[in-house]
Image (cartoon, rainbow over all chains, first blue to last red; front, side):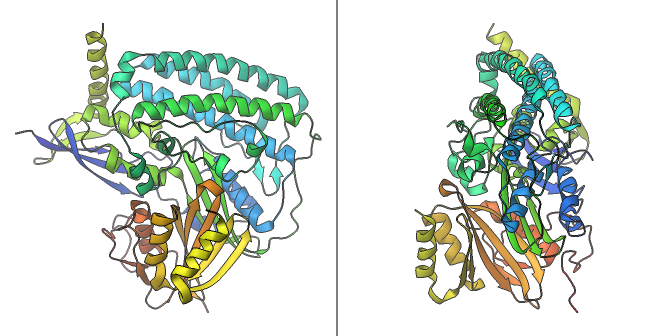
Amino acid sequence: MNKKFFIPIGPYHPLQEEPELFKLYCEGEIVKDIKWETGYNHRGIEKLAESKTYDQVFFLVERICGICSTSHPFAFANAVEEICRIEITDRTRYIRSIIGELERIHSHLLWLGLAGHFLGYNTVFMWAWKYREPILDLFEMITGNRNSYAMFKVGGVRRDIEESKIPVILKAMSDIKKKLTLLTGAVMDDPVIHARTKGVGVLTKQDVIDYGAVGPTARASGLAIDIRKDDPYAAYPLVNWKVITSNTGDVFAKTEVRLMEMFESVSIIEQCLEKIKKEKEGDISIKVKEMPEGMGTGRAEAPRGEVFHCVFSDGSNSPVRHKIRAPSYVNIATFKKSCIGQSISDATITLAAVDPCYCCTERLAAAYDAGTGLKIHNARELIEMSVSKTTLLRKQQG
Amino acid sequence: MNIEAIIEEIKVKLGSDVLETEKRSDTRWSVMIEPDALLKVADHLYKEAGLRFIIASAIHTRRGFEIHYHFSKDEIGLVLNIHVILKSDKPQIESLSNMFNASNWIEREMHELFGIDFLNHPNQEKLISEGNWAEGVYPYRKEFK
């Protein structure tokens, strides 16, 4: 009879967006059940927002996530601007979309690197993170910060993109396109990566609908939902781009969607930069005179999927209630479907495939015998199990 | 299916259980219903009209515990809020989690933060505090003078 044990994944790292503890209940090599505990680092941001002014809330929600730190201000701005019934200038639209898409590229590259690392492809990890650096440099040039950019405010953005910076960004986009082509070829044509990711962690379209999953997780299962297209905001309706989907719902499909999305992001940025030249420099803000009473629902397509903010205003300068839903909140719940029946060596990449924010840190704690409570694997050993499976496949495939 | 058709169907299905409809913009609508009619309207929206459940926002006001169930019709960019007001002394409403898993976590969260009971929820355990908070203390409740 196979030995029964559970693997706790987590519980948390203070830098993570959504620290959680997953318990994988296994029989032998196979994951039989999964349970989770959340709230290890509950920061009460929704409650805190009630004590801040609208201007301050931008800085607060920017700190929900360290990787996609502009997606929350994006959705919050959309919600508040709906309450105020203001139309932002076209130049603001382009700048917001440029920031949003640069963030998508750096977030997807970060994910790709980690996925490579979990599979034992450390070259992919090093390449992807190396190519991510120039994107962070661009952020520093445009916003003054490599992360938590503090660009958004009600009715506009805080900094303009000056004419002199446009060629620098365009050059970086041209460079990153070449690197992305290289990375895409390396990942998509590798038979071992196919063997490790195809048919692994499959989510059907119905699973996605049932769990309300969003972003690349949903699009990889054939559900073409993308807030940028469905509920257009910022400059997305003003440029040409397409929603990337795949049908198989496995880890490979999620990788494919993210890789292809980066090319679309580059295209969006290039088009925005061309169009921004025609707009008046410095026209980046609308003065908001008063905050009316009412509610606003703002959405934005973060790298991981739809971010949703619901803001209730009583006419004062602080929200009376601010509900926030990050994409991982719905995507993580799909583990119940994607992980069960997988082998432990595939569990790491299956969990990482929805790009939950905790994947950027040391996630795996240890495996304990369910009966005795004694430790039988540690974190390093679990990653090594995944890596050794890849090594074995590489040997078998010559 | 356009927005008006969706709203009209809700009115036909629910009759007098629809208390109020509000159009905030072309893609933002709210429909206030009797709490008892929630399962019926959610069943229609999810199974027949093909709307996706986004999340629910609860707020404690002088009127009681208000819940806005946000649904999305992605093809037309619609965010439809189904709005219910629950009594302050005994806030309870049917759970949607037997219909779709998307509401499972948020109902647990609302139960924990506001003390709203979700009837027939498959697992109404605490989501955030894992039992580390005192029982019967609901941090998002407000005191009105």
